[in-house]
Amino acid sequence: MALSVGIVGLPNVGKSTLFNALIQSAKATAANYPFCTIEPNVGTVEVPDERLYRIAQLERSKKVTPTFIEFVDIAGLVRNASKGEGLGNQFLAHIREVDAIAMVLRCFQNPDVVHVEGTVNPIRDAQIIDLELIAKDIETVEKRKERVEKMARLGDKKAKEELEMLETIRAILENMEPLRKHARELSSETLEYARKNLFLLTTKPLMYVANVSEADLPEGNELSKSVFEYAQAEGSPAVLVCAKLEEELIGLEKQEKEELLKSYGLEEPGLNKLIRSAYSLLELITFFTAGEKETRAWTVKRGTKAPQAAGKIHSDFERGFIAAEVINYEDYVKVGSMTKAKELGLVRLEGKEYEVKDGDIIYFRFNV
Image (tube, rainbow, N blue to C red; front, side, top):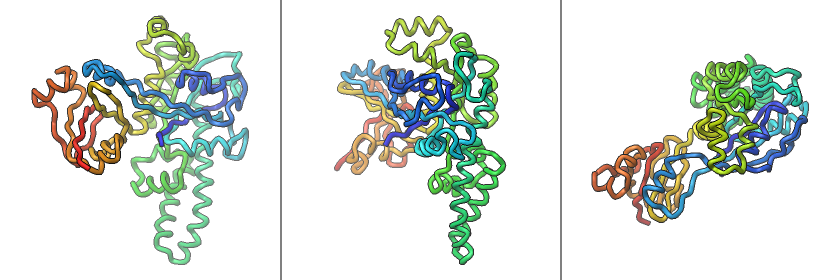
C-alpha cells in the first residue's frame, strides 16, 4: 500500500485546486463554498526527479519508470470539528488514515472567495486545525485511559506501564500542544505507542503549504512569511505555492509551461517542491536500477537495508540476496556510464547490512 499525504485545511483555502494541479486533472471539484469536498479524493503523483531521466539518457534505456506518492484531498475542517461541527468527525477519521499531513494555509486576499472565519489569517487557521486534532486525540486518550485504569488497579504490570505513557501523552495534549512538537523528548516507546497503538492525529509528520496569489510570486508576501517563521519555530517544513497558477499549467506544452513560469520568476512549478518535501517528510528515499531495457526509480524508507530494498523489486531478490553492486548517482554522472564506472572500480560490492542511500544505482546479485 502506498504511503499517503493528506491535504488538509479550512474551507476555501485552495486545497482542491491544489489537488487538481497535483493529479493534472479535474478529478477534485474546486468551488467557492464550504464542504465542497465531502468524500476524500485520492491521486497518485509522480515524484519529480531529474536524476532518473539523466540516468536513462546515459544508459540509452528504452523505458523509464518513475516512483510515485499518493495525495488525499480531505474536506475542510472548521472550528469544533472534533465536536461534530461541519462534517468534523468524518473528516478527522479520513486524516487518521493518511501517513502525513500537508496543511494548506490561505495567504491570499480575494473578496470574491469567502473565508469561513471572515478574515485571512494563516497562523490562526493553523492553530484552529491543530486544536481540533488535539481535541480528537484527547478524546482517544481518555477512552483508552478508562479501560487501562481498571486493569492497572487489578495489578496488571503492563497496564501500569501503559497508564504512565497515557498520562505523559495527555499532559502534552492538555497543554494544547501537538505531539509532533515533542517527538524528540518523548521516549521511543511512548512515541511508538501513540502512533501505532492509539493512531493519534498529532503524531503525524506535518508540512505547511502557503498558498499565495499570482501577484505575490515568486517571493510570497507578509502572510506567507509568517507561515515560514511559524513552521521553522516548530521544526516543520514549509513550501510556497500558487494553486491558481499551478492549475493554469495543466495541459500546457513544456515550452509554454517554462515561459509562463519564467514570467513569474520561477524555475519550476511549486508543486515539484511540494511533492519532494512531502516525500522527504515521509522519510522516503529513491534508489535506481538502470540498463538498456529500463531505468527505474524505487522508493524505500530511509535506513532500509540492501536485501529489503531488493525485495521491493521481487521477493525472490530478497530471499536469495547475495550482494549489491552499488554506485551513487553523483559518482555515476562523473563517468557517464555503468560500464565505465565498473572499469574504473567505482562500483562497490555491498552486503546484507548495507543501508541504501538516496541516489544509489544498484544491481542486485541473488540466487534462489
